Length: 100
Image (cartoon, helix red, strand yellow):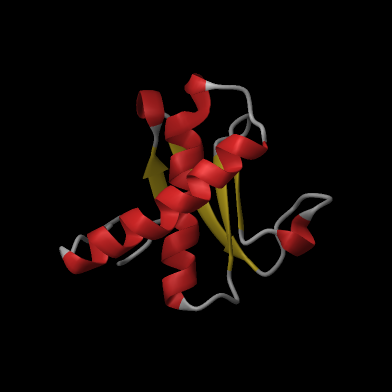
C-alpha cells in the first residue's frame, strides 16, 4: 500500500500525512502514530517497517472514523487496535491500495 501525503477523513476533513522520526507529543516515545484533529495532521513514525506504517495509518484512520461515537478511553483504544490488525489483513488479501 502506498501511504499518500493527504488523508481525507470523516466529514471530508483533509489531513496532511507526515512521516517523522519522532511524534510531536509528550508521550511520543510509545507512539507509532498520532492523529491531530485540531491541526488536521496525521503523524506516522518514519523508522517503522512498511507493514507497520500501513497498520499505523489504518489505526489513525480508525481514530478519525470512530471519534464521534464516544469519548476517548481505554476501551476505545483496545477496539481500534483489534480493528487495525484484522482490517489490515483483509485489505492486503484483497490487494487494496491507498494512493495520493
